[in-house]
Image (tube, rainbow, N blue to C red):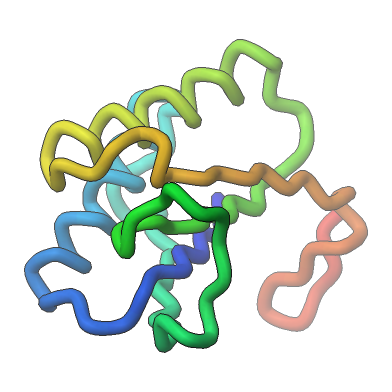
Length: 119
């Protein structure tokens, strides 16, 4: 049950945003074997003047934060980053240097579902 947040510069088309969400989900499915229904994703659009990133990046720059259960191997995490970045580069023409991915793994007691704590 990965939770995905994608921060992008405001102004992209609905088609672009849907393709971006698909790239991320497909990368997670391939790397971790998550199911098709398991899509907890959101895009957060930020005005360019409110989104600061290093010089040399384009307005296609994005930050993808993925929060998931702990316990994945280093190789699985590498695969997540590589598969997602490859899809975004291939389908949307975004340079890999403009894709910044962070993985978070909170402990089980920090998750709650339907009012109940996991773990």
